[in-house]
Image (cartoon, rainbow, N blue to C red; front, side, top):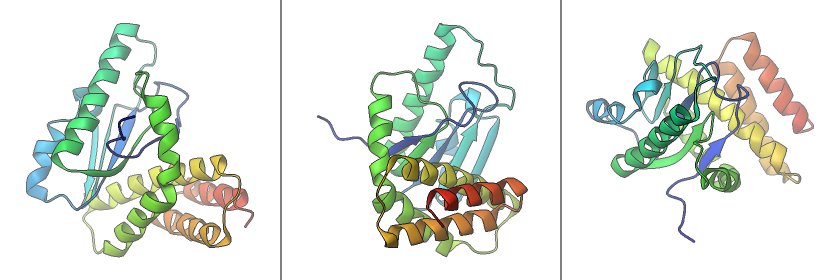
Length: 204
């Protein structure tokens, strides 16, 4: 079996292709501002409505009212485009992991995303620690990207907790700390609710 090029995670938040569809690319190393245009050029046009960059993260998403009621041919085109985007981006700037709100409709993706959950302790959490430690004074654009990155991290961590029945105490402590950091990044009331839900799942 061929190894996955990078861990892929997915926890659909919109019940299918409605509202905004998007993906977060968590890079293995910072991406220099001068190299970002070439990576944006790889983003499927449908996902260029919202673009947010930080030093090691890119989010690309559709317009808010992206209609889920389009025909199968259009769905297949979008799936092919997202698949090509992820793989081409990784070839140019290696990804530590990626998160998508909706899986491409290819046979390999459900198993790939299922395998990705196991990488949360060894890949996702270390990436988050390094990302948070490197944060400094940020432009408004980078601040927006930080909120989006943390929001996606919340969904990833929640997915991991939901699918992992027995967590060692040290990992529970780190996940709880991550929930607090994420909530502090986003001042909306929704972030506090997310934090409380994750802490409740952790028994905290």
